[in-house]
Image (cartoon, rainbow, N blue to C red; front, side, top):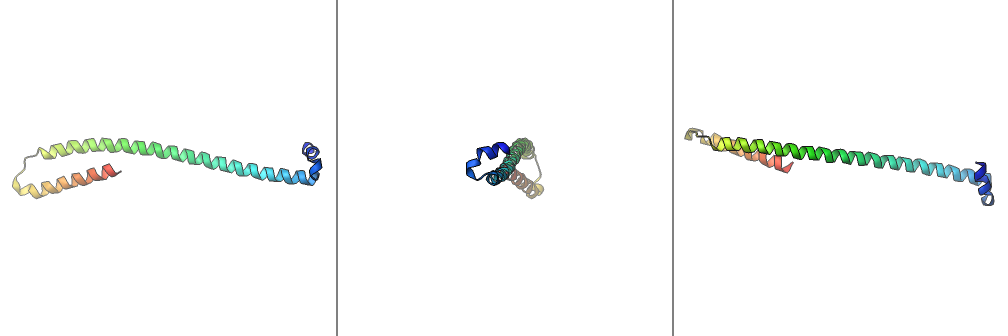
Length: 103
């Protein structure tokens, strides 16, 4: 404080130095809060990126399994009495595929 008062002697003395020190303290606290907020945002963004990459990989795995299921269903030989249920099953497979590709 004494060093600041010597440097600020021409600017109003001790009172001016105290006001400047108080203002600079408030600015430093505000800056520290901003830096911490930016770090938290960066970490949250990194987490969302990791989660989205995991989701994409999981969707690819599920689409592969769905392809296998669809191939098996398409190779089934069924009596005509089950044709309506067969088409409903294929519609459900298409519905699941659409949901996975949108995710």
